[in-house]
Image (cartoon, rainbow, N blue to C red; front, side, top):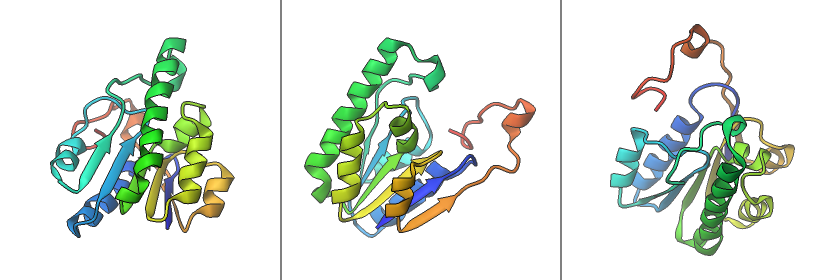
Length: 167
């Protein structure tokens, strides 16, 4: 089954982490792959301690797309595509695959779109994808689609991301 958590509200990654932890709690194997995220976040501590969860991400934070240099884009594309290749070669080893922030990587051409499409079309387990603005073809194939809508957020008042809440 395909799950999508999308929208401009806070909680998409948090929801996917909840599913990953739940699945791992039943002894199932989970691949938790993050796109466009390379800096430390608190959830990594818990996810990496679980013997049933494999975490993959790039080892550097490149910031927002609009502030990336051409070199940054080349490096993150290479990292994302290597990770996607790992998924394609090992997808049968996992009961759940989470592709966190895949829609931004896909929409900004920071990941090989054909590799992403192959994963969506061929993977037989629980596929969880998060991010803003999924292309319509993702939504058409999905079994679950939850939109998380921002009503209010502290950032609107100039309050920056807080440890333990946003990261």
